[in-house]
Image (cartoon, rainbow, N blue to C red; front, top):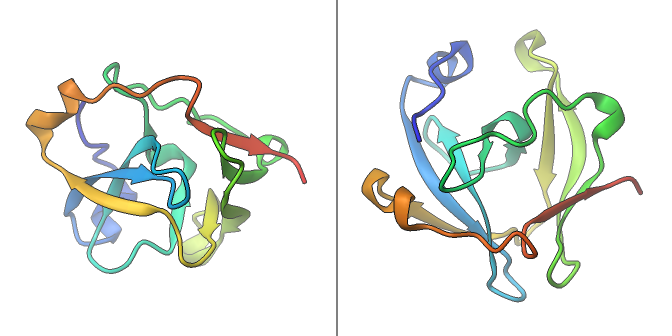
Length: 128
């Protein structure tokens, strides 16, 4: 998998890292996320969610009609609420993280090929 190098990454300082996002309740690994810039993870942009090991971005191209709450499909724990990030006129689909939020673990690039996510335990985007 390669980092998305676009103006969103540039606007956030040009640095990125991979994060494994896991459910705080059941500890299931949910997805790999490209975090751009420094600071806390306050929102999850749908176009930065990656599946492994294919490196596909399953939610890229989603529209506002697809947007729903972000939850663990293993235990139904709510992770985020839908939002559209409008700062800088980006209008990006995102999920605002509900505190205390998911477990975040930095993943080194060489580890990405060994991560296997059970498709039964992935995220669920559902309309409320």
